Image (cartoon, rainbow, N blue to C red):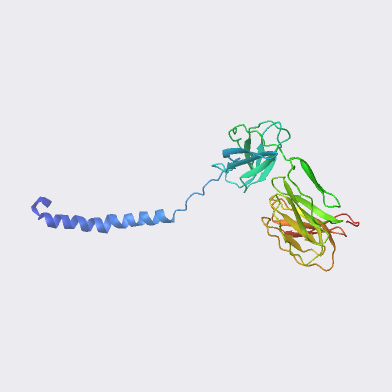
Length: 290
């Protein structure tokens, strides 16, 4: 006797096919899915290369040089950029800049205009040079001198020329002079912890519980630091704030600011160099300093 599914109700035939798929095919699919999920993936291959070219090179004229800025390259070659090299060719100084900085001042050795390129550097070497910047001429550097005589007379030469009046107070000793950013004024430190302002220098009164021995310019060129014999430091308006403590076992005779502007080195009579802020302690050759 023959048999045909056509003689059975359609709903019954569809139901049987669904059950067969669920019992036979679906478990196989589940097995396939499980097999795929436990198959280990291949390790990605990482390649290293030199960085790409820095972008957005911008150059503006600065006093005695150029201000150069740039943006990081689109590719660092899969390894950190350690530094940038900035070059403007003849008449400029090749400048090396840390990899996390994107601008620098480049000194000019003459008054000629210059165009700049920037290179990014990583552990694999120098990357591609940037496009050449536009040509810019530097602004002339200041050239001048302020002097004060024992009777309080102030004289000036060069670009420092200004209407300088005779000082009303006379002193036999000055422990330092810092020019203003315009070059048309200056602050002078006297022997009794006073600051005398001349030209366009703003008058300021210092507060320092120590005998002042030195006056140095702040690295940003906007103010000054007064250094005391026992290591205390007074920071003027517009100068970076450098913290200090009174030291009883040294005699300080001078100091200098770090390039970051966030630290000072203080020099003692014994040649010990005390670091404040981001400055490190060092020692000079054995001797007596003053």
